[in-house]
Amino acid sequence: MSAFDRAMNYLTYRDRTEAEIVEYLQKKNYSEKEIAEGLALLIQYGYIDDDRYIKNACEVNKITKYYGKKRLAQELLQKGIPKDKIEDMNLYYSDEEETSCCQKLLEEALKRYHREEPINRVRKIMNWMMRRGYTYDLVHTLLSDELEELPEKTSESDRGSRRDSLETAYQKYLRMQRLKGYDGYELRMRVQRNLRSRGFSSSEIHALLNEKKEEGDFDE
Image 1 (cartoon, helix red, strand yellow):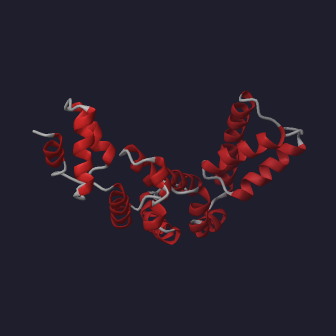
Image 2 (cartoon, helix red, strand yellow; image 1 turned 180 degrees about the horizontal axis):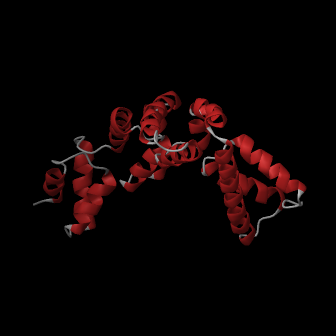
Image 3 (cartoon, helix red, strand yellow; image 1 turned 180 degrees about the vertical axis):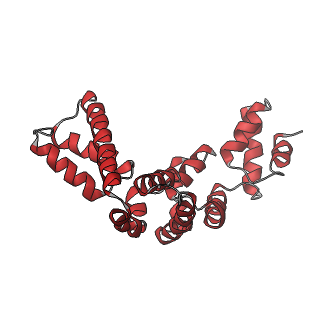
């Protein structure tokens, strides 16, 4: 079979990126010239088109996976879409659409972790959403109602446990960032980001870090 015919057979199952076609033909031991000629024909006849692939991936994501842009970009890179084309994703997946998808996925996360204690629920939801490509700030904004209700749902003992968890996490990240050579303002900012990634609220973190600054942890 020619490289073109072999690639056409490969395309029978699903759409492919240019990089996937090249990798497939290389594994079939076609020469660089054969691959280039076959690829040129595939592009000419419209059988492969990376721009179309990106568009289709975005459309499918908006009705099935609901991933954030970061996770979707990672998947496109894994499929061989060049980095300079990844920004084209914004043409087919707007910020408004990403927010809408985030809201839909957040509803699933709230159901998934509804049995969790308040002390753990928000943290687990935040981590689950961020693994699906959403920024901390976007999830935190959409989850604001849950965060506002958290103190009312939490008993005194729970709040004590939460403070203990925050303190433990703080000490862990403080040691980690100091070992990396950070101090002063940069150390504080890095520890703050670490704690936010664990699902602690901004008010909790700022209160703790202000205490620690008074104690001299972030001398500049």
